[in-house]
Image 1 (cartoon, rainbow, N blue to C red):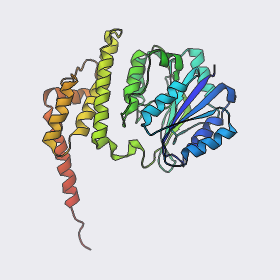
Image 2 (cartoon, helix red, strand yellow):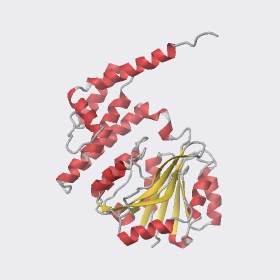
Image 3 (tube, rainbow, N blue to C red):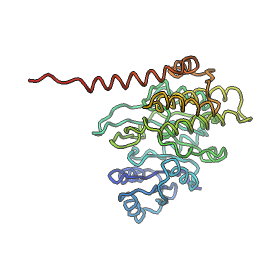
Image 4 (spheres, helix red, strand yellow):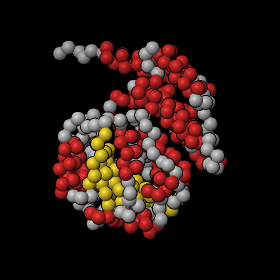
Length: 343
């Protein structure tokens, strides 16, 4: 068995994908020890051609081609293909530190970790360092997933609900049938990582630099996608899937209470992204969908700020979300009317 499978979903990343893959090749591992699984999600540019060229140089690179089905289904294809002891997800516009794969694998193996939180660095669009998240003072901790969920937030990273810069035990991953929820175009990591950490018994943290996360125009996390009906449907699907997962008989009370936090998060995101003109109509439609899925009222047991505050409003004055949307649209319109004084 190989020690590691790396999964890379590919769509419209021609300027970045070679840098990503070559960073995975500049490592202190034999090529026989790991595989790089690239899933071409119907990319219209030369991304697949670049990967194909690298495959001719390196026998541990594999390319799967599929029609465009979205990043979640692309990653799921990679999960199905993965045969390594551990699995690592990396976005094609990101890259990793040279000679670090052996280090993170050794750490996971020694501590028998199901989930390893790794150090990562946020880069601005010009390549300068925006923030480092290096899990300081957590190196000696072995915690379960629920404890780790909140420990990761104490470091205050700008993106706590992520799947990148985390190493997973493949047997653990596949034994629970864990995979991405399809057709969630935004914050899809948050739904899956909640289920993973609900189930995990052994999580560790590594404080050494490893993963470099880039910021670029046009990526999903920097687009207007959040404010679309498509995004709202994805948030609603995430809340509904977590609610159904919460009702599994094998989960104990602590696990079920933990899931209240991400359920609240995705319900609030559904409300905030759904309400647009015509406001009253979309508000009523959103409330009806939430009621249909049994999400008309949120359980706030073990929920922490800020979603505890939003859940309190949602349970008592749901129309506040409608008024907030109207106010912000009016405020934006007033700003647009302001004219600069003539010189």
